[in-house]
Amino acid sequence: MSAGPVKGVAALKRMLWEENPVIGQILGICSALAVTNLVKNTLVMCLGLIFTLMMSCFTVSLLRNVIPRQVRMIIQVLVIAAYVIVIKIILDAYLPEISNELGPYVGLIITNCIVMGRTEGYAMNNKPGDAILDGIGAGIGYSLVLLPIAMIREPLGLGTFFGMQLLPPDWTKWNMMVIAPSGFFALATYIWIVRAFKAGEGKR
Image (cartoon, rainbow, N blue to C red; front, side, top):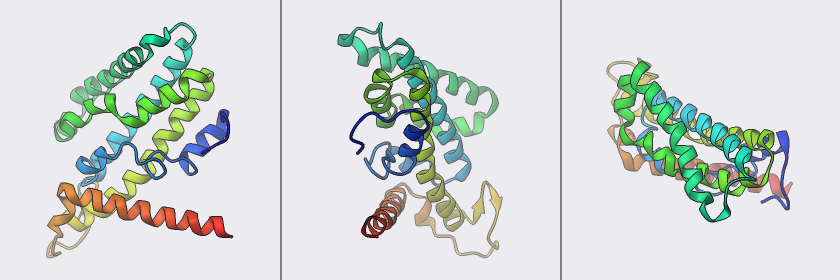
């Protein structure tokens, strides 16, 4: 963890690797259960989270000096919910199939620990420009975990990539790769590999 507040581009870079919210803090992992069996759904979820983080952090930071401390969490949830509703409306209008497949998980962005953590822990104490970069960094950091997992689970489990046939039709599908528990096993393996790599870096 950083010793003090990190500003600007440094805040973005920190969230990608040093303090990646999924790898470092094990936050927002519920998405790994539902969406990482399909790359397309994972990409949409990641873009939705990046948008929500960016705009929520910006808005909360912009209002930080006028938000009463006693009700700040309620206001943060309202701000986050407003942007999630925008995402849901856009998905229902232009990508109804994906919207149905994602089901309640789009709405659950409202209570995603990453979004709540960045608005409360960073946006409430930093300028809008820095808050935007921190939000984008956290969203991309989240995406750098979920997308690689989806890129493994979908081909092995369905033989497809982004909905297109990738492996031969006679490929023996690993059905276990598309069921919910495998998402957690894949996530745990990914985190273990990355942490082992980071530990190796620290010894150099």
